[in-house]
Length: 421
Image 1 (cartoon, one colour):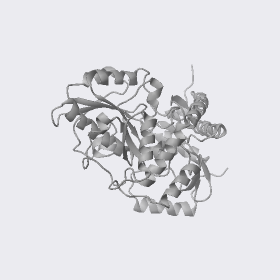
Image 2: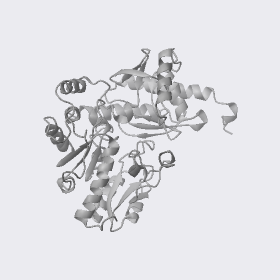
Image 3: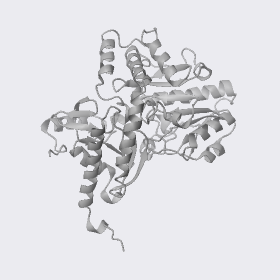
Image 4: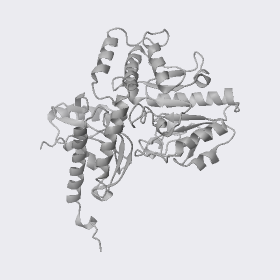
């Protein structure tokens, strides 16, 4: 077996360039990717890897998806960027299709997920002042501990992650943080100036944490009763990842605002959006919010093609059926180097027995065997393969994980092995 961790001169050169001239705001796995197709990535030496990360769900429909690439290339030959200073031919069809997919009236297009989050915060405050009647500058938004919504100043102002917050203050006020999954804490935090509740239906960065079944319906009820907005950040959980278009669907909840990104760009271009009804999005007037690139012709063309893929239901079905298989296989590893498995659809958080080492160390072992997965918070491996993956490829990746866990166990110092008495 070729050990993919042994970097060739070509890979070492690329790594040296990146480490020398690039800001060290990431800690990449030791592989230099050159191309991708479907569920596979290929490095500069021709080694192939099963992608079990999908760029944090940005590549739900596979690398170099032929339909999406064709749309992008065709649009590039016409026009890519105009800014919203003029109307463009692809923009209208895209936002109409996305609004219909979400069951909402209007779309505010942006580029990255955190831009969608920031936009929703502005919209919630504007709605609070102009519709609910909250006194100016007193609006507050309830957020959850363990959240991940991005890394802009306002968003890290309510982060629980020390790495994201240390040395970046002062922070933006107006946020009240409560434990994730705790409805009573949300209600206790509400006051007359609360304008919104912002929640990830499933917390991805925190380790693929799925809340109790009553949680999201309970937030919807609290929001209605106290006249506040429910904002669902489905940037990772949405667009097929969990077996439905949105995870909120699975618990019968319709938020006031959907936040979308990552997969909305089809793994081709950055596309994000806030989707809601006219009573909220209609509050924006010219000059009050914008983006040079948001809703550009190229992004709109690709975004429309993504919506068309989702309209058939095929991707959602694949996620449900293949996800059930994935979770059955992963459950079989509990007690064999895995302490817990969480998630739904083609999305899993796998907790590694700490006696075997860190999740990062297991991911590095998996990389050596041709599977790319990513750790989070020390002990958890996140798994989110493209929705186009096959059963055989899923089995291959889980088999590799099992081999890596067994290898780590065999190397464990005797002092760490406990003996039943």
